Length: 171
Image 1 (tube, rainbow, N blue to C red):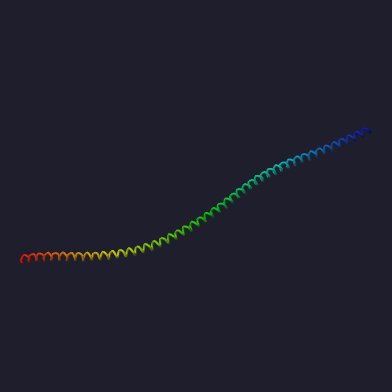
Image 2: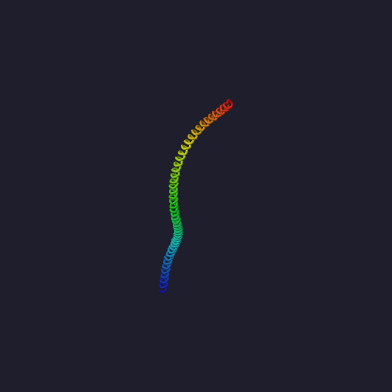
């Protein structure tokens, strides 16, 4: 009876040992599975961390690009303002030059009118000089005729003086 009891206990111990071994194998499998899941979780965590770092770098890059775009937009606005100011200055200079050109054209027109008036006066002076020359030539011709007559008269007077001397001698 004791032997049967010991065999029964031995059988129960073997069964318990077999169950314990089964539980140990299941636990090892679970532990292996948990380790595999832990490695996968670590891999996913590392991947997520790397993705987060990439997103962080991309966000920093996007922020830097946004700042550059903002600076470029500010420069473009400034350039447009300078261009607008330059156009305004150019328009003002163009208007001033146009006014100067109109003033110069008016002055040139006045100078042309004065020149025409002076040319008319010059023509009148030339006509007067031609007339004066003609009068002078006529006067000189008259003077030459008068001088010739005077010379002729002086010759006659001299001849008369000779005749009177002869008469006086004869008497």
